[in-house]
Image (cartoon, rainbow, N blue to C red; front, side, top):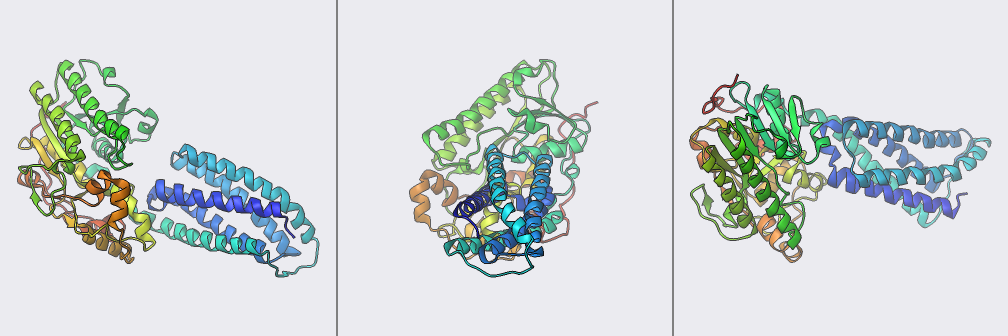
Length: 500
């Protein structure tokens, strides 16, 4: 029935589709955990169901009569679904270049499949209705494997779309308590934490200026906000009540090659120095600067309970954080109160460490890393946004402040809690030796090492966490617990003058 060329085109379509699903949809874009992609997920589910039927039909049968016409209708319906998917993707997210290229190649290859199949199906449609079974050797095995794969991911996408409402974050307006009309400059405002901070500030009626290298990404931020791509675009008479510095090359997004180490350090120091120059020339200087740092400042410290008064051990993350904090501290000589937040693992479904764990854990492939005894000091993204606002208004906070929940956990406990929140087993360990051999310092400091960090300064300054314990925090983030989190009394907005 079908030519070898047609089967090769089908095999190429399967390979490119699998790459698109695994690399783009699962690993990089994580569509199943983005509430904004509910429509796209439903289109994927329907298309995968059609593909499953097509693969089984082509692999094991030769439809005649109205069954051939039905097969032809499904082939053409896939074109319509794909076009609708293209529109949905453009409306709801920015596709990476590799995904656009892959989609183009998929469309061209599918056109070749249609060119070969449509004439055959038209001939078969004119014959009496029948469904004779057949086999094509290894090609039938490929078709069966592909049918099972697309059926599995289609069902997963359908259920992911159904749960998307439970994953939606609460309104950002209630996260911050600042004096009315505050003017805040945010660097890194289009990043994982910065987006939520800008949303919270804008929703509360504050004037936000976002510094970003990518103005197109800033266009997706909630209004009202202003955007600058360089600090020298800010005039000397600009007025800011506070500056929040979150900009910097991500530490955990790749192995620490020599070039990457230089970029990680230089990006933080360069931005912080530029901020110091900006503040030096402003006629009205901000009252406070909240600058990022990380719990990596402490190095790998085993079971030691670490507060802001604790000392460090040496390592790459300590060198980066120490240099970053020293540079931020120099801004204090210009008058602002400087707070350096030593941020732990930030939890939210759309990014950070939790997003990296979701796919393997959801498929039952998660478990502890190494011996699982290393400490994980974590904080939910909303609690971090609230702590940033608290640091802006609380005059008792200055210098290093640990931005972590009060109850850190060991890695094995984190794995169990995440498995429980997803209702999946979490018993597949990740052995330490390949991580250590391949990742070197990256693995030893970020994956196999850890810190047991306690938020002593924040707690002493009256900050109350929405999510102090991991299990209910994960249940809340993953939609397993519909009850809203309750914090203690709202922090009073003090330490900044009310602005007209």
